[in-house]
Length: 590
Image (cartoon, rainbow, N blue to C red; front, side):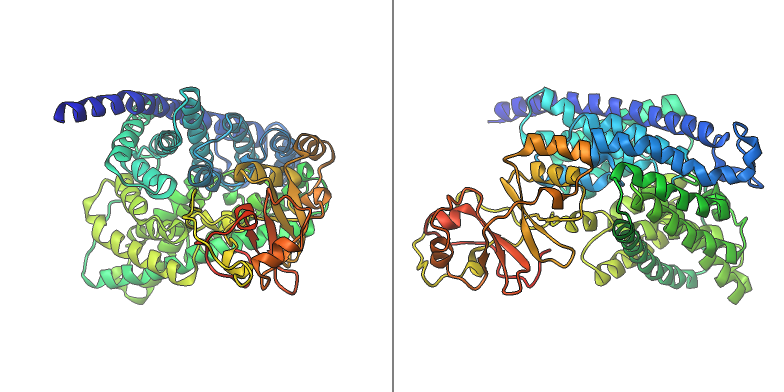
């Protein structure tokens, strides 16, 4: 028996360990290459290595006659490049990237198209280089994950191993980008894989170490941020750190809600083709950059200055609000970039401002703004992502100071708890829920136990699914087709913005639809087809009898008496008698 177990361990090491190392090396190289790509794009668009670090709003040497006003048109020019690129080749490369990876692991067997890595790298580098106020971590996570998915499929791995390789790519990306290999491991396990088994842990560690070796060899072993030493002078400060954690949780939730509110506003206002949206929106973003050039790009130099106490209290608050708006606007207009670094930025400004206020109230605690800024970074990150382990370990790795652990963990736990009290979703999962995808919904049983039920009395509401994805009519058709393909379903219900049922998007004319979506910038509304529905109060027998010519291969959308979509009745429920383990009727779709 022991000999057999030993062979199994060797077999697992060969079939997962070696590919994990390869993925880690690839993610490390991709992280380094992506950083250089951002630097090159920033140099082209702004004439500086990092425009947020410049003083006095200097002109771009390529167009000196524009002076500092070049930042008004730079995002629009960048949008004219990445907008068509994303729209034509990989619509899933739009946005901050991590939700797409989470969806691929939870619902799509770990499958990510290989072209996503290339398109994401180019689109995100151009977005950031032209002034987009987003992070580089989300894109490199999606790039690394796409590498893992591609290698796994080339090796014809089963879904469980393919998902692990996707997580390996994410871990390697974080490890190489932040020079934080332990944080990379826990990010992959806590957010992407949501699995802490021994096999997953060991394999992801191999990938993270491999990526860190590459990153340190090419970029050096110094932390990417210069953070001050951390000290706690009095026990009373723990109460202050606890208060900061609660405030950071509130700010994290506020960041999330503002992000999607601005995205909704952009969706409502824009009526032109999707590829042109970043150009028009880029002018608005450029106006904000002209007023507040510190928002240009990722903004790590500004973060450093805030933590070092170089900004006044009022300006710290301006930077906090400005970053939330600039990041939300960058993503709302169709830009590509992460929200990880903006969360750290917002947390640093919050913590530094909090520390300055405490210093004004009690002069004995003056000069501690840097310590509060460090804790604010971790707490705000936990408030947005609800990944407390990752947040705590990352800030510990960045500082290398053990004295930070107690106040940091205290603030992170309270920030996470505050965030949970205020909403169900994180900054990542809310994007998926808005598409009708619930990662926590129980999977439908593949073979439910047969049982004879009275179909003349069993209601549709008791048998339907409420976790099936659906589409909004205003979504770009390319995005809708991607969601349809990822779901593996023959059709998805389509609603208007008020949840009223309009029809379905079917996979039957998929090739021609994909061509039309590319040529004409269609929305889902342009491809909706009429499709029969059933009412939630109906019995199963009534639902089947109402559709004598319907084969039931896809099932039926379920609506309430106001024609609002409330669920989906699967084909198996129409085809024959058996019980359903799906949840009961909800008043509106998730």
